[in-house]
Image (tube, rainbow, N blue to C red; front, side, top):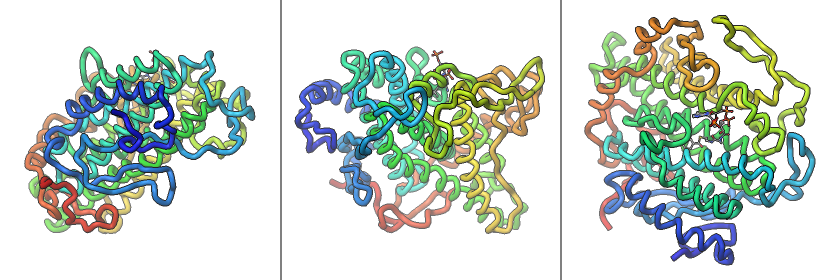
Length: 472
Ligand code: BYC
């Protein structure tokens, strides 16, 4: 039975019979999906110290407690309404935002919401085996926190589909549970969400780079003329911040440990011999997950993106920071490949909106890598990590049919095939990582040899707190 106590919300669920009926049908399927495709081996006997969103009050929206994962209270929240909110960009600039979906934009909006919604369960599926290889109880808890919140983000999109898209919306909500990450016949919609996440370096890079695409896409959707979409995504961003924290600090702790191991061995040893993760491997995983996440921003030149912008459905990140909100005259100076050469070409700015968002994203990633590099500085080391050129290893867009090295220099097909394992994780790299992660670390306060402990625990608890427990 659906009840407002079980489903924390600020959408008036208890008086919304239509939504209740739709959820009554969907929720049992969701729970079944969670048990089948969610964290494997931690559903029945484990209790996890997680936060639950219980309101949108900035000073106290989260409540921490031990829960069994299938009993997590997935809630539905919209950020508080903004008084007299107006459409901030595009052809309807300055008009009041919409509280209902206009018929002419129904398909486009549904497509955007379904694409966003599809990524959330996909990531839970991708990460479902990681608990069996965790580097510590602290990290195990963070993994589950991320997982339950991605589940809640699915609920957020399903709320929109159920409330604003009638029968089609209910069908789409069911399809969101039917597609499966990596499934040949029914894959997830966007490519990065079909990639395996088999080890914790993948996981931390994913939460650093792919969740950051979540941030840029949610920022752009939070500008939407459809007010319920704007308010839903604004609140999702609050939770997203923690996911990127998990990724960024996870990699920072691996780098820290690698530096310690190198120092203890007088910088002469192969870190792998000491059980650590060597810097070239870390760089390869940056190259992989950054390039996969660049693809998530779509084609460089996109009439879809132009139309989303024109109709106010999806904008730029932080639209208020731009001067011109109509963008009818401006051009974007895009690097394009023509006749085997790279050149710059001015294209109408509205068709370049995917690229504009990608620029924002690259800047945000760069700031993160700069913070990682400070760890080397602190250790007095000259090594540095970096982002590859945005043409490197692309699967979507105009560079996807060509090959480039991480500096952006063009390569022939033969050279690419010969050298790709220098830049991307090789089967041997993956084998090595699995070998050092084969035995999970479940003892409170203990950490795998390849990662340093965090500076502090969760919610002011000590680092050696029992974040996941098995007793009733
Ligand atoms: N993979 O005109 P284009 C997150 C397709 S992550 C496969 O450029 P558009 C999260 C495209 O569908 C954020 N196909 O497309 C993170 C289209 O297909 P059709 C998720 C792709 O619409 C971690 C064709 O190529 N949110 O939240 O401008 C954990 C033409 O392309 C891909 C969103 O994505 C791809 N990568 O741009 C958990 C926001 N890229 O129609 C969660 C909603 C393009 O020709 N989505 N195609 O069959 C969008 O805004 C847009 O759909 C995209 C694509 C930016 C993704």
